Length: 171
Image (cartoon, rainbow, N blue to C red; front, side):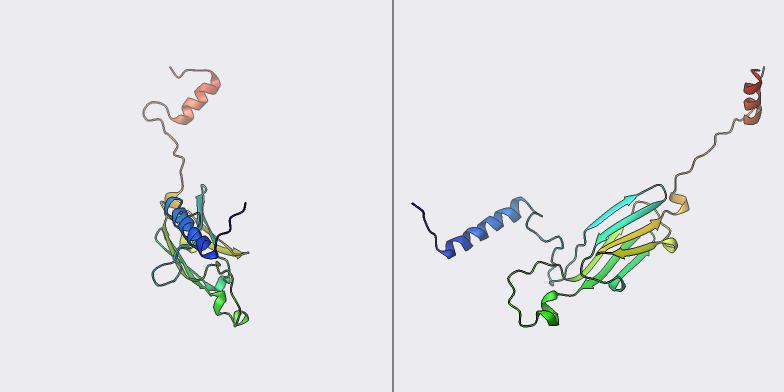
């Protein structure tokens, strides 16, 4: 025998399930961009990595054009900011019946302090298919350097190399 529950029972059950999911598994049912108290979006997902010569920051910013993104670099702190317009307020959505509205919208601002110095004057930013790729060359002082060890006293490094090639031990 099948038991049928009124719709109100399912809505309460859904609310309780959502409460447990958000409490014990944060991030699973939450938006990638978390809403702040004034309703604007504050988080922006980033991937950041460094090679021997540069730092690369990847940011997913859907629904925005490149000229709407502001990038500032001050010392080793990078800030990305902008605003994604709310689709609900668009002319095309006027008088629409909404069933689901999950796309991110609002103001975003994300600052990241890098563990190394970068050369902001040589930075490059590219935007394609909703992905920002910011390439920041490392400052010369932050790049790894190879230091040649010099022999002190007695023979110079050149003399040691010459003696080794000639088969003499230098004494």
